[in-house]
Structures are given as C-alpha cells and as structure tokens.
Image (cartoon, rainbow, N blue to C red; front, side, top):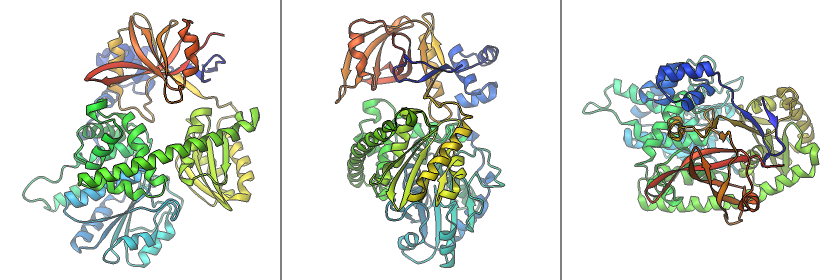
Length: 589
C-alpha cells in the first residue's frame, strides 16, 4: 500500500512493489537464479521461465520479421523502383534525437550498404514546425521529384503528403506516433499502430521503424540477387544509432526495443560511427574514461546533446554528425553541438526556475491540482519539453508548458496511469493540432482558449486518476538485509540492463537504519552529497544529487533512517566498484 510520508526528504510516496512469493520461488527454482533476480523479474511481470529467459538474454535472432509490418512490402518495392530508375531519394526526419538517428540509419544504409546517395532533410523547429514540409523536400532534391521517406513523422501530415504527390513525388511514411482517424494518402505507410498491422511490438521508436525498413529492404534486395559476390550488408553496425534513438525517445524497453537497445549498446562500446565516437569523447563518457557505454550514457549525455541541436534550431548539425566519416568534420560538429547543449542547459535552468515560481505562486491549490499547466509568453519553444519533464520529476503529476502569443505552442509530459494523449483529445475543441502518445505530446491552441483548455485538462486528469491525489511515487523493489549476498544484488542489476521505460532501474532500501560516514558536500553549487554507507556487511561509496542540505546532520553522526537508492557501477582508474545513488531518505522527526 502506498502512503505519503511527511519525513521523506523529497517528499515522495513510498511503497514496496508487490510480488507473489510463490511465483518468486517457482521462477527461482526453474531458472536456478537468485532470489533478488527472481523477485525483480516477477515484479516486471516476467513470471514464466521462457519470457524471463528471453528478457535476460535478448537475441537479435528473436526479432520479428519486418514483413509482419503492414506496408513493408509496398515500401521496399517502391524503394527498389526508385533505385532502378535512379530517382533522387530524400529522407525527411524529425528534429529530435529519435528523428536524427532514424535519418542517419537510412542514410548510412543507402550510402554504405547500397552505394546510393540520398538527401537527408529536417525541418527547423521554429521556422517550419513539426512534420513533413513539401517545400523542404523539394529543396533537398538535386534532380526534381523522386521518392521521399519520412522517419519519426508524417502520420498526420495529410495535406503535405497530398501536395508532394501532386508534384510527382512518391511518398513512404514511416512513423511510430498514434495515427489519426484519416491517414495520409501516401504510397506506403509503415507504422505498427496503424489498423490492420500484424507486427506485435507496437512500441518501437521512430529509429526502430526506420531500422526495420532497412531490414526489409535488405531482405528484398538480397532475394533479387543484389549482392551476388558476397553476403548482404551487416546491419548490426547501425545498432548503435538505434540504441541512442530508442533510449532517448523513452519508449518501453521490452521485446524488440530491448533486443535492439542491448545489442546497440554493445556496438556503441566500439562504435565505427565517427560522429558518435567524437561526441562520446567530448562528453567524457567513452569506454577509456568512464567504463563501457550504458543506458545512462545515452539518457544523460548523448541524447540531450543530439536533442539540443534540434531544440535550438538546427537538427541538421546532429544529422550531419551521425552520417559523416570524416574525423575532422565530426569533431567540429561535435563541438558545435556541445556549445548548443551548454546554451540549452543554461537557458532551460532559467526557464525551469520561472516555471516553478508560477506553480508555487498558486500556493497549495496549484500544487494539489490534478495536473500542472504553466505559460511563459517569451519562453523558448524548443525547451518546453524539458520544462514539462522537469515539472513531472519535481511534482509527480502530468505537466504542460506553453509559450508564444496569439497561437501558443505546448509540450506535455505525463506519469504512469495518466494518458496525456487522451487528456488532450478530451480538449480537442480548444486545440488547433496535436500529436504524440500516452506519455508525451505536443500541441498548439489559440491564446484565448488557454483558460478553457486548462479547466478541461484538469477535469480529464482528475477523471483518469479517479480523484486520487497524484503524489510523487517512489516504488521500492527490494529490501536488502544484513545477511543478503551482495553479489546477487550486483548480478541482478547487471542482467536487467539496459534500464528505461517499463524496465526502470531497481530501487533498493535496507531493513535497518544506516549511518553515513566521510560525508562531503560537492558540486559547483554545493548541493550534492558524497558519502560512504554500510550495507550487507561492507562499506560502499555513494552520492546523493540534491541532498546537500543533509550534510550538517550527517556530519554530526545523526542516525539516518532507511535510504532508497539504486546501485550503479563506478569505473575509475581501471577499477569497477559499486556505487549507491540516493533517491530518498526518511529523516528522523
């Protein structure tokens, strides 16, 4: 049972994730695994030995066939026709990390796998907005109308698709967003969510759909004898891009997504992609300095930097970075993106502070509202998603951030249990356009409609939550006792990686009070805590981001009540040690 604990430092609602002990014992015995691993698997709904084994040991051979996707056969035949006729091929990608990695997957496959040039193209977030733009496609082509393939966008772009067709273009739409009632009249559509699609793994990222198109095209061309003197191109070398886009887009890391992400992380550890290698080196997270890349490498380093290019206006910087083979050019582009990311960080910190001030200005009524909706007339449009995401992290409830005047642009993020796409759909009469999925969406509306939208959105979130307050939730997965075998805990964490949506990093606590020693405040603003804590008979180094205020109490030897934390690997000077990362602390009254 969940309960809000007033002594929580954050504060959050703590709860122990449920798991049936009989199911745990059965899984433990049948797979010959440890109790911690069995419990963590059962909590994730993996109760049967085969599904648990497949989850722990994902294999590329287990990927479903690309031809289970509706529209795949038509798409690969269209591409083959364009290749025979030597028509220009334009790849039109969205401006976020998912879109630029999806674009790079197809561009590299065409250029290096097929020996055919193609022309990547991205909209400018501020000048062009979201989705396919016919004028950009035409400008990208060196030889008139040909074939355009959209990636990570296009499923709602009926008018632009019709415009392109009228000018002689053949159009393939590949996307992963929720389809509208009326689909664009493209020559082929590949989207696992479209009606009648038999592909089981619906939650692919845009880059996953693009990779599947490459798989289907390779199979099709190989059957036609495209490579008579040797094997077809090895698509595994593109999986580093797939992992970056998949983890960055926060789709569920289950099924095909988990297979692609895990294999892609292995490729990323020794990536032949010059742009990724330079970006890894620049953000100081490459294998020689910080251990092999993992989900955190992408979520906190690569993803934000690739997103920064599109957020600040020029997604083409990221796209060019990921497709160049020139080391000098790659380094220059990586440095430009690093500069854009630093600018983005400084500006987003300022805007987040303003957003928090708007929430707190409403007092308890604002903090207790079903969802948070903030508006800043002059806020940077490219940073609205960051603002709404950070508000979700801070307040634990769906959040929407708007900017502009006259016509407002907005970005929405949600929490488990609240479908933000349906929330916006319930407000459709007040909205000009919107798109997205259950956890994230973008929209626009007239400024005069904002008050009505707020009332309708609050009512819909209240209805979905059945009136229950949405407190920040902290689900604890496992209680570590003094007689636990710590090696079993470490092994379980290793086998469950990569973490992400639908497979969150396990949260642990102890069944006994813990003392901290060697406590230090660190960070530019001295707001983080470094310490050692005793657990399962050993001392482990730890860090608590944002827990700096506890230093005074801890340094005086005050007994700290149970901690909630994750366990990570700390790579330093060739040594690998476990590291505690705090989520929360229950303080004495």
